[in-house]
Length: 319
Ligand SMILES: [Zn+2]
View 1: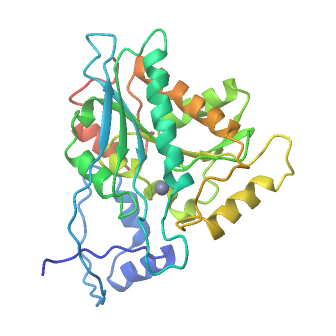
View 2 (view 1 turned 90 degrees about the vertical axis):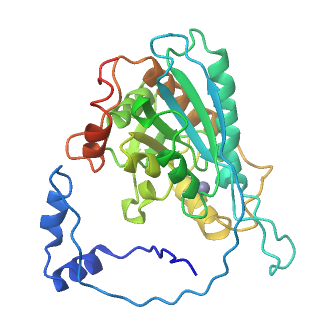
View 3 (view 1 turned 30 degrees about the vertical axis):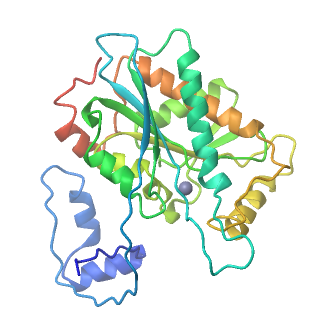
């Protein structure tokens, strides 16, 4: 049998202890890991893990649409929007409904992607660079095909300005805020903050960074290869609703519907909040596409070196 990669998460404390047991200093390594000179360090640590699984080979496809830019000089530069179309399939061991419909996660994102593409065909003036709209597959299997695309892009990543990823939307009405899960480390975050402000809204930081949300969605596979990315979640401060309404709705979704067969369309949804968020993401993509600079990682950002080494020497940052 082929070797199988096992991936998991460990807590920061466990990571620090593991490194200390191997004679390494976590803080020192982390500091040096954002420099060009850093080289991976082999730990003399071993573990035995037993995993029982059945492997099944199958084919699945990303679906991508391209809208040509209007400026011949910038037509071979791209802004890419992504949303995963796959979900968990079905489970014949369950009683009743056995289908993981994934209405919020992530049919809502795919519907948004299609609407964004439609909007970009109508906007006047059109974008100078080309726009890509990609529905990715196998996100739920570990971001597999976003990773494949980032490693084998149809359009070069060094000529791609940004990825804007949509993975679940807010179906409970309009909010004053929008949450930035990208952890505030590229100029796209500043653009989100400014665009939200212009729309009378406010960008809030990732409220649960310990959950690693910025590494658990497709955009992170692009970021790992240096591409600045934006990934937002719907806000929590709902207009005309009690203060704790948003958190309650999110907690209820996570506890009872997330990754379950009950993630289905609910007739009581108020989709005005999705419209609000997707219009914001439209405005951001439009500004990036027509901007005079490539978005950049901020100093010290984890993936800045990757972009600087592999990408920006190919394409000047000023357009
Ligand atoms: Zn998802």
